[in-house]
Length: 511
Image (cartoon, rainbow, N blue to C red; front, side):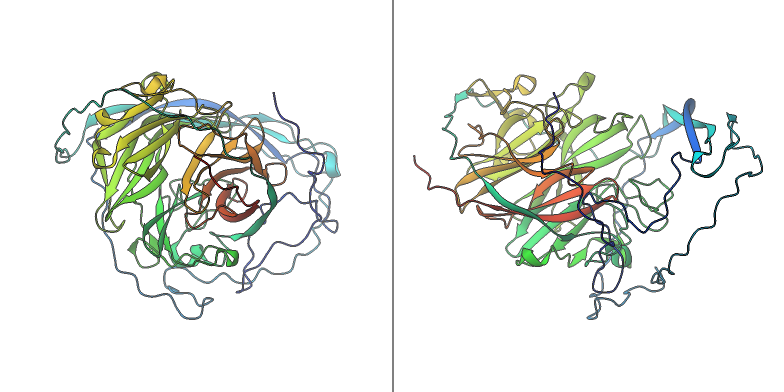
């Protein structure tokens, strides 16, 4: 069942695209009415491509090449925020010339052949030209392992540790929260953002914006598939558009009402954000490696990730090889994927492929869903000192923390979820969980007293009728019980935005 959009959901009046302080045009993720002064476009597109799968044998060297851990110490950004820090790397875009009224299309264009075989010659005139039907080859790689380079150094396997089953309390849910307002604070990434990530770090298009506190006064901001020079917008790009599977920035501003300021990014060359967790970028083998959460234990940083085998043609679906953990001992400059802290996606049904991990008390709690955005939420925990030891994890099963029961984990809440973000809020002494509910067509919030629940009913924060193609919902660690700041991504602009939800004051906790 699809929950209908609320009656008040309607496109906002048209207005020009936003601009940053440098006069650069950004992206508005909100639904708006068409420009009333724009010329009407054609009713049909000029071309309709019909993809036809074409198998292609693709040799895959195993082991693959080692990750590129080249890193530089970047120079400080210019004092003038509009000054290009690396004009030799990226030219400052020239102002867009004023739009001119398009010429009326020729009602009798010359017939031309499209690539591939097709039909349709554009008969008719004006808005009723018939589109050209084109057959477009859709390469479907068939990976074939071949001998590769030297194997990476083996890591020492952790000892087998099985914690006995323990019952756990299930607290009553806290008082339901209400939302008085949800506002768009600003664009975080891409052209026209205050951070100017396209000019400073060659990040024109990206998504996610996962955040955690690395140390007092510093927030890590981790992005997913990122594209630079050559990226043309409208979703993710390709391997010829400066593709990096993930990039990492740092932020220190506390006044989030002014936006999320990125101070610097991990770089492998001047003004170029580095890929942190390497990926093979081979469809049907390992298309990419996407981060799903981050956290710090002492001076060591951790990232949970998913190795994506391939994206589905069904929106919001993908298949993973495994979910795993990586760590960094040099403040996020370089990362090591642990060879044993992995949850293999056997038969595509593993329950902990897209995870978010939260340290609290003596444990790190792992909330997870299967691959894609239509899974149910499971929960596990592990002592902090054993976070890389998969055998030490206990899974929440019918009121008990049980060992080795990952695919029997009891659903925490009813319904489906995509890409969770969870934190413990000290100010309200409540757990907060934000995620995309595709059936409800909304990014929602739930709260609880304990990670295992009971969780409140879901509270809509962002309606996808208001923000088309929105997904994500990653909470800023410096949010409070009243002011919830979180990032969302928009597929149509493929960039990240900061949102602010004002909640009612939570009631005092009772035992």
